Length: 255
Image (cartoon, rainbow, N blue to C red; front, side, top):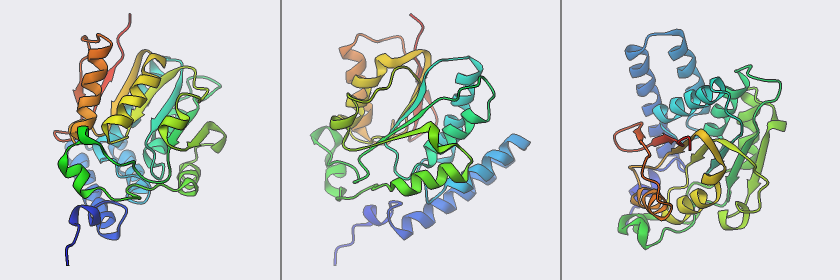
């Protein structure tokens, strides 16, 4: 019998959830040893509320999202939070919480959530042979009810979230998103990442942040960003790597 171990190790299955939770505990211990502060303790508690049931995003990437929203608030950047690739809503809820905790104005940002809620689309040639070999239908299939549950659990008002189910090619271009302060791309494959950048990059306000959760992990994600920069003549971006193997962000330059 052939066992698809990469499939079983995803958080769609019990084994993957167990390993995800164990790593979350280990990373929390590392954080508290490295930064023994009240903030670190609060972040560690927050992470254990969203993992592994609501997000597969690493601890460091979750903390980065939380802090970048805080930075956007302190800078007084206009615009909403947009996440493309939601799964069960954990990372988006962390960003929403970071925003509502900051009393920057009477009006909180909207949190836009784009996901097929049918799982990842199939990878293409630009995503690599291994990615195509181990792909399975329903990979990272999210649940809208779980998304609402984690927002409520963290105390983020549900009237601040806009859940847009459907494949990106059918939803992104028609969504009434005006300005974006935080763009979180957790879309894995080349075509999806490229489409998100094509649609939303121009809406990111100067000084806003673009975070790519899969940068360094999936070759298609890296190539999509490189191709987008080349096509638009963008060459003044400074990438900040979150983890050695996955996750990076940049701040959109002021023009």
